Length: 275
Image (cartoon, rainbow, N blue to C red; front, side, top):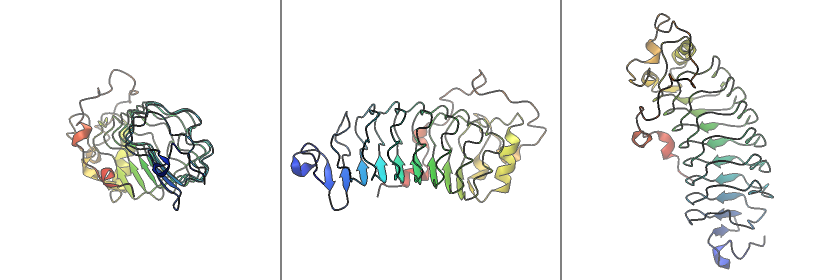
């Protein structure tokens, strides 16, 4: 493939191109815009550690061969709708450690081959309905260290191959009834460091699910109630959780900042190194 002069180092560009492996590595180059003329047969594109604050909708136009894309450690605040729509062979997508506050509807809908999705370390406060519905091949989903206050009903229903789910260090007060019922392949679930509301009935589903799946919930005893984290969810009784629940967008939501800062949470997602 004919690499553009401005792209690859051997042609005077900034990115490292391995033509044998169809790999383009543009990491840590202080890029503020997408490099142009990435070869169409590129299989692996690494853009992490730059200064990208936005992406054009057609950023990955023509890159149908991509199986691996890293956009982590940038300054992305939003993603344009449809930005990943041509990446029908993508298997791994890293978007962690950006500034994303929301996701557009259907942003992952064409990624039917996706196996690993890393969204941790953003500022997501909510997820769109059905955002993961088409990701039927997904095995890993990392949502930790965001600001999620709630989860949409049935948000994980299509993820029957998911083995790893991290939800720790968010602002979750409850999970919808049945949220985890379709996760038939799940081996590892992280729930700690959320201000679980143990005074209302919604918590009983989570309590029972943890109780039935202690072998899958990492630190099952550590999923604890409220900002004081004083009592384990597992220990909650029907009497404790007698009241009706209040939706998270009211004044009862725990303000950001009362939880342990993300900087002191060392969880194993940091240990997953880029190969």
